[in-house]
Amino acid sequence: MKKKILVLCTGNSCRSQMAEGYLRHFAGDRYDVESAGLEPSVVNPKAVRVMQEDGIDISGHASKDVQQFVGQDFDYIITVCDNAKERCPYFPGNAQRIHWSFKDPAEATGIEEEVLDVFRDVRDKIKSTLLKFIEEQNKED
Image 1: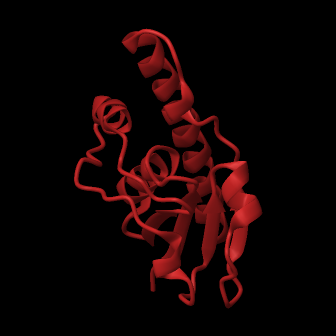
Image 2: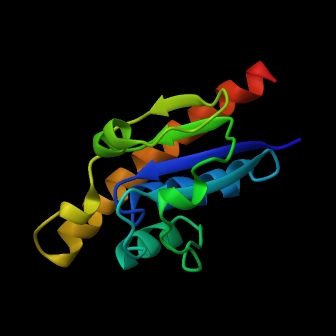
């Protein structure tokens, strides 16, 4: 049976969307993955672009409100920003809570290429963190 993961951030537009994309790509056979936000907006086009550069298509993703998942059981609830960690609603069951704080690339300023470099940096940090997480989970199973 697949384990269930919920990835949370504030807007469900960048960090949690990237994490969802990587988890589905690298471990979709092992996990059912969802992402959501405390204040959902839209999936950031720059997040879509930098993920596409790495061969992951999140263009079909939609920003979702965390409230639609309240009451569901998850094996892991992963927060990828401090705001989501502090404001995460209660979920029943024995979900393991994991927190990784990634900079919000949507706050980057500068010319287009400088902003994209921030998105790429955050993307790469999320990817390496998730690959380590998946590796650790493989050892435990």
